[in-house]
Image 1 (tube, rainbow, N blue to C red):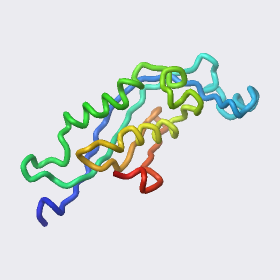
Image 2 (image 1 turned 45 degrees about the vertical axis):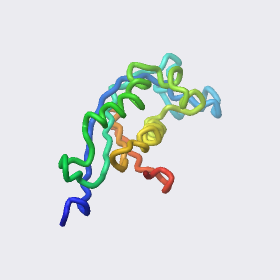
Image 3 (image 1 turned 60 degrees about the horizontal axis):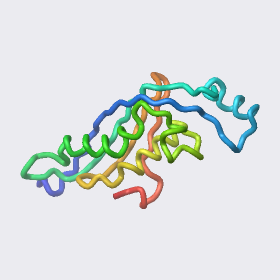
Amino acid sequence: MNGDALRVELGRRYRFVASHRLHSQRLTEEENYRVFGKCNNPYGHGHNYVLEVSLSGRIDPATGMIANLADLDAFVERHVLEEFDHRSLNEDVAAFRHKVPTTENLCIEIFHRLKHFPHAQLELVRIQETGNNSFEYAGNTEGDRL
């Protein structure tokens, strides 16, 4: 198999800290508390998120890589970490001003922000919220794929 036909998957891990309040304008106060419990605290709460990004691509014969990690790191920093790290997702991230910032929605938002990385195809975004909870999103339409 030559290098042009071989596709390899790359995984890279990032960390960020953010707070959020799980609260829906579509629900009453009582329903919000019933659905979201302590995560509906009016003052919010925070997580030390672990973001895993998986990309695939052909191996460049000159470099032996599918993507330069420095390029990927800079892209993730610019499109995700600068806006999310040490922020209130509800108050500081426009995408969550009218959408509940669940980790499911966070996965989808980050996927859309990273899908245009020019050097490889985004396959999957996975976020670990706690030691017990993790979520992943791989796109749901061809429009989500490069």
